Structure formats: structure tokens, C-alpha cells
Length: 440
Image 1 (cartoon, rainbow, N blue to C red):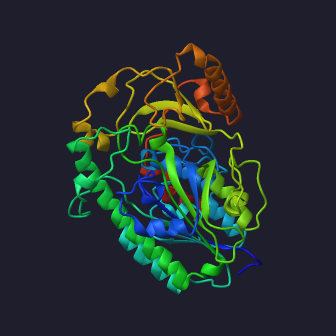
Image 2 (cartoon, rainbow, N blue to C red):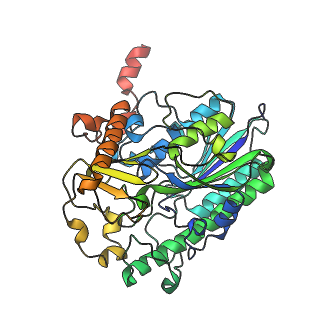
């Protein structure tokens, strides 16, 4: 190892939200993740910056909001990092780490451009169990043993679809249906497939953790588990309600790390992981990162520190710009275009849950929504128009305006245009004739 630098294993998955037994969903069979949580620091109020795959992961790997780093929509739709953005593997390589990607990423069509020293690609849709097998092989046979390592393990699950032949469903009768979804046969059918996919994800996470303990120097290794954003259900993925942006964040410190396992209640963000990992690596802090290091939290610091976190959506299937600010008790969502209350992505629109939910979500959305998360944790009662909340609305609006101005949000200047259409010419070589003329 280089000095006292510690290894880092980051396991991330797709569209899971907090549907895990260690986050209170007792009917979700996830014993391996539950066991990891019992050995870890568990952040009960952790959030992504966006409810969509590429934008959310862009913040996880840069410490910057999507509109700052450039990935305001999906990578396969043409969105790219801005020039000068530094990714986490690039930063850690400079600190002497050997960095490796195994499995899923969603920041660029070509994973080799993201700054990893090594990419172990295993296909376009990297399923959890083959990814776990590849991660185990890498940990067993890993090169550069004199250098600390950063291993990113990305898993496809639990993205839709949940085909029965891929994920045996669980018994719909024993399922807990969260408050933000209608409890009927359609939702239960949908959740039974989702929970089956989580069961397979959980097995894969258990294999990776076991491989770290067997081959990966657990005395000097952090294990971090999270997902990109909320689950693929109405009022979750694609929205700025808590089910769309709340994520699990489970951090198991090395065996000799000071501090003990436990739960933390502070608001934290995926933006915090880059500064945290860089502090663990001995790197210098940077004013460019929007988050803060969680090292003190991992050692035991907790309690409400007055922090606000910010969320955004710009592009997914369609242009749907919205921004939000959340404090420990309140949330304000600003909708920048007219439209229905919920815009459902294609996979959710075609889901069994959609068949059983009616059309109330097609009612016009208000320009501003405000929720008291203490009295209304399911965000069902919008209080923005109530006179007694006028001062609160003004305060939260001011905080949101200040953040947008400070970070240069392009929405302040009007409609955000889509990126150039993806083209094979983007990365094309020069014409052969031009090259020959230069060599002549």
C-alpha cells in the first residue's frame, strides 16, 4: 500500500431505492445486505441528486450536480461530461490507487474513457451474479498488490423488466406495499417480480463482500453499498419525491477503524462520496466539489446540522425540468414546465402497477409544491398554497434560487436544449486522405 491509504470497494446497483430489509422493508428478502448493514454505518437519510440513471451516477462519480458536470440526461441519448470534469477514478489514480471497473456504468457508452486504470467489461447488461463472479476473480488475482485499490462493482439489478425466467417472483400475499403506491393485485404482482430481482442482487452483494473478506485485505478496506436512485414505480423514479431520490448508503469501515457501526440521521448526498473517498486517500480537498466529507460521520458525528440537499430532473424520455430543495423537515419542488403531475417513463407506463392506479396523476401539475415531511412523509398533501406556509415557501424558494445561481444552473436562462444527436462521427478518426497528405 501507499502510506496509510485504504482500499475502497464501491458496490452500486440500479433502481432499488430503499426497498431493503435494513431500511424497514421487512418483506424484502435481502439478508446479505442486512448483515452488511449490521457491520456498517447506515445513513438513514441519504439522497441522490437526480431520480434518473446517468445524472444520478454522474454526481456519485464527480461530486458535482448533473447540470454542473454536464450529464443532464442519459448517456445513450448523447449527454456527455463537460470538458475539465474529473471523475473519481481519475482523482484516485493520481493518489496512487489502482482503479478498476467491474460491471455496470452509465456515464458514457464507452467505459474505457471514464478514467479507470482497468475495465473488466462483461456485456451491455451486466447482471448481478456474473458481475459478482468477475469481482471475485479480480479480488483473488488482483494485480498491483503494493498499491491501494479502488474497485467499482456495478450491477444491473433491479432495473425493469423482471421476467419470471430471470427472477422467480416472491409470494404477492406477503408483500409490504409502501404508502406511495396503491395496494391492489396489480401493484402486488409488480412488486413480487421486483422483490425477486432484489433477492438475486442481494445474493450477488453477499458474494462480493465475502470475496473482499477472503481476498481483499478487509483490515484495510472500506465497503460502500448504494444505488443510483429510487425504484421504477409511479411517484418514485423520475420524480423528486423522496421515493425517487432516497437511496441506501451503507459503509463498512476497515476492521481497525475507530468508531462503531450504527445509524446516522443527518441528511447526506451522493455528492459527499468524492470528498469522503479523497480524504480517505489522503488527497487535498477541493472547493469544486459540492458535497462534504463523511469521515466525521463515519466516526460517530450525527445530529441535525441545518443542511439542505438539492435535487433535479431535466431530461429522461422527454424534457421535464424540475428542481427541489429538501431540509430535514420540508421539501419544495419547482416545476418549470406545464404538464401532468407525474410523467411516467415507458417502462413504468407499461407496468402492472400502472394498470391499477387510475389516471389521477394526469391532472395538471402546480408550478410549486411544498410538503411537510414530518406530518406527511408520503408527500400526499401539498401545502404550498396555504397562507400559514407563505413564509416557509418564500424561504425555501430563496434557498433554491441561491443554489441555482451559485451553481450556474442553465434553467435560469430558459429552456435547456437537448444534446447533439449521437453520431459515429463524434469519435471518428481523420479522413485517410487528410492523414496521407500530412505524412507526404
